[in-house]
Length: 281
Image (cartoon, rainbow, N blue to C red; front, side):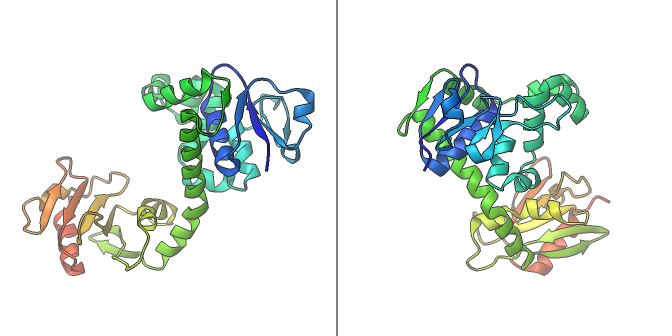
């Protein structure tokens, strides 16, 4: 068990916030926002994050600021994830991960160039949740178990760790049950209702589809609010418009933008009919 975490004082950033969140979820230890001493950097029972100018996993030091300018974008979160053997899964399963690395290391303008978007878009996508949590984390210097910010960080860290550590199992479970239908010329992934399947497994369908070496235009999945199914465009493929089934007797919800519908039917032949009625090829 480590004794405590040290991260840099002043403004908090997403990489040190998330890295510390995962570490306290694992270790349940306090956080101090200050510069470490030389003795602390050499003590493997003390974790330093985003401070200290050292990357020494064997000594629990996870800083990236000493890396050369041409080094691939790597932040404190990257280093902690690598140490936990979760980095590759984070890159695969968290679309925001690489962007977080670029923002922390290269800044918003370079990140916008990398994303091939206008620099203003990066600011337009910022969240007031991020702003508030980082401000709360940055305005104090000590966080112990029981402190509101520490407890929220622990929950965030646990959620992220659990997501990364279970996603591969969910994808393997889905691989046993997911069917691919041909509707017109389009491919649709269908997850039947499976007795005992965990809700988190069904929720991983979107990630499962993204890993397929096949163009998928829509998904069909068990409705969590009833015995029927949801029908949804994948990647907003406009060749499906579910407003086409809005008047059907067994369809109880269709979004006005046409990207999702809910039906009470459990009959696969009927689901196929509804999908065909929604084609706009």
